[in-house]
Image (cartoon, rainbow, N blue to C red):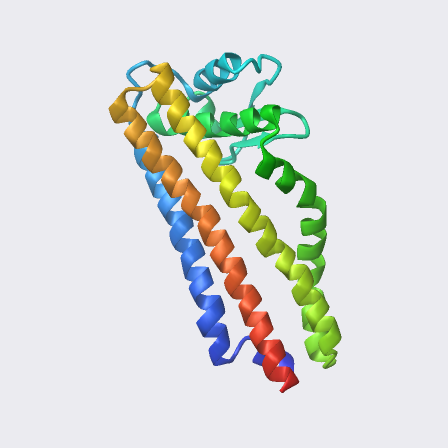
Length: 232
């Protein structure tokens, strides 16, 4: 069956396997870097939650709550609820890693408050990208099974939305990290040496987004290559 050829061909190892390796590497790097700086205490003794509160208040965002959520590295900013969520490893931890992650999520809250362009674009395309991502693979698979190349190309087009989302995400995440590093340094919440550690943590985290973009792009090229070979 042709469907088995989707996974047992040279192009699979050329495009898909490198993407998997990149993703695993990026995930391992951010976890190991955070684990290292999670055990480096801040001289100020500020916890992630306290640092987040200070950053938000200094930007006039007293209405944005800082909540604790379960999980590890599950920190996020929820634009729908306008809430900064900090994981167990960040909320009560007075470490360089925790303060850096908390500051990054506050960077997203500041972006939301000031109407940062790329963040607005990403928020606007989320529903469309989620729909495209969820339905694209089934369409591609069904298209290959029944040799309906038109359906395959529709699926490829929808999958391209995932690449678009990852592309738009990059400036949003890099900007939030830059804001975090600059804010922590200017406010003296951390020492210059500690801020260097924050930079390493957030740089490692940034690579996960780069890896996600590269992985999605390689997967898109893989489907395009298969469709081209099937057509010929």
